Length: 120
Image 1 (cartoon, rainbow, N blue to C red):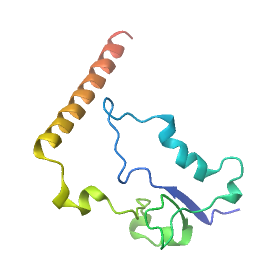
Image 2: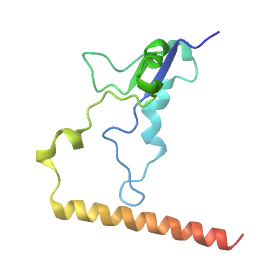
Image 3: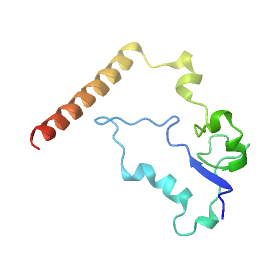
């Protein structure tokens, strides 16, 4: 049996996690698990519709995907609020704090990885 539809859950648009201030938890995946419906995948229901363009769970026809430029699986439909609303960006000092936090978290992760590699 050939696949006719592909289900996509957009878990990247307008969702932001950081290692320290806003780490991802199991609860953050509850919406996906509910939509995925592992108990009965034949009863899945899209949360996306023309009336609900921000619905994260959407079904795509394989034929439509194959007709995309280079058969791209980079499927998105939710407007990224950080790109769409440039007039309401956080203050520069808040952006700087976020950037510093992210860089420090990344550096700590690399240092932990380096320590683990040294111990092997």
